[in-house]
Length: 111
Length: 114
Image (cartoon, rainbow over all chains, first blue to last red; front, side, top):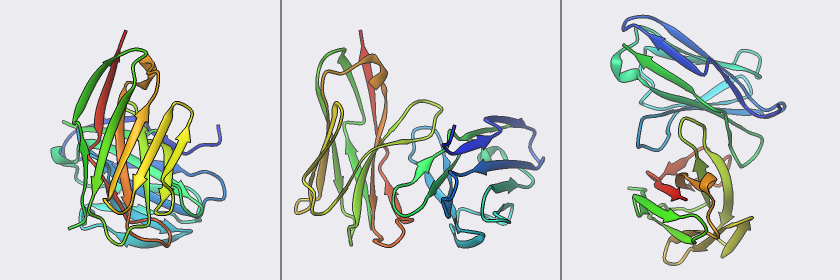
């Protein structure tokens, strides 16, 4: 499968715990995006990488959220001290020029 | 404020019928408009992408139209199938560079019944 992959697909955690998600983009796509999507809403932009550089972060990305793309390939999104409001689908997308290709998402449930 | 509005919010049709979904936007400057299909619990999948100079684009049974003057787009689905049941999201880009500025509509939830 040469599409965008995300792991895990589902994560259930208790409030206050830390969680980390991984995204593997399509090979040679230099751009990588993280979005958050809640039920009935469109995806909300969180952050964007070009290669290993994090070029933009949304105001939605509080200081409990951190994203990395250390080698310009896969990326991780970590949420510290999770809150119930963090429950959502976290989507990753990659692109080389225009069109963004999305992964299947990681569904986070914070109890 | 840049906005993308879609109608109807939800739609139920019978298998084999056609339907048309609407998208109005106020995004400026306009770069391109995309339609995505999103199955429940999955990531969005691109159906079409159109720049301001394109009036129509087809992808199988999906045909998108764009009127950049009135800032309206439609997605027409022909001979619907059960697998068309999904959310259809209109997305407009306001940045001609790397398209990272995407403004998302809330989607139209389509249910195709046998």
